[in-house]
Amino acid sequence: MTQLITILIILASVLLVLVVLMQNPKGGGLSSDFGAAQQIGGVKQTNDFIEKATWSLAGFIAVMSIVMTLMYSSAGIIEEIPQQEQTEEVPTEE
Image (tube, rainbow, N blue to C red; front, side, top):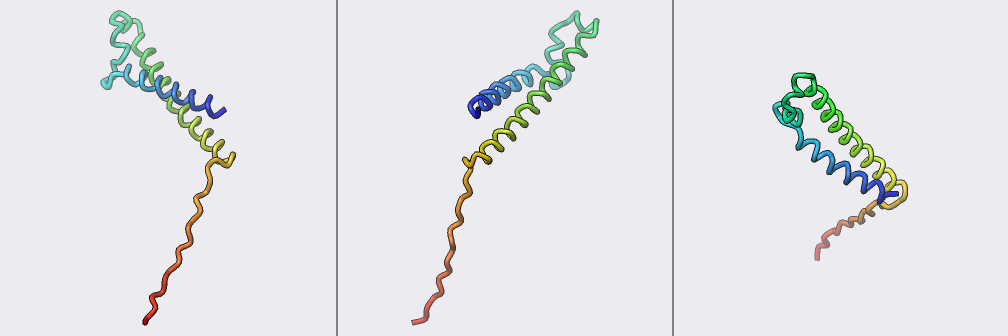
């Protein structure tokens, strides 16, 4: 199960990188490549889709990371690190 979640997180991360690279910081992005489509409202729809895809993928990665952390902690894989007892040595006067 953890392998499946790991693969999904990696796949979503790669898709998120690709979606972010499609965006233009000035708001054009992928929609600016469709010249004539700008006249019929294609720009707004493309920008909305890319923005929704970005937020959806980021949310999916966050949720799956939390789920995976809870699975590991409940399975006991993450063990508490035992604290070493610190003993103070009292200097003896001789």
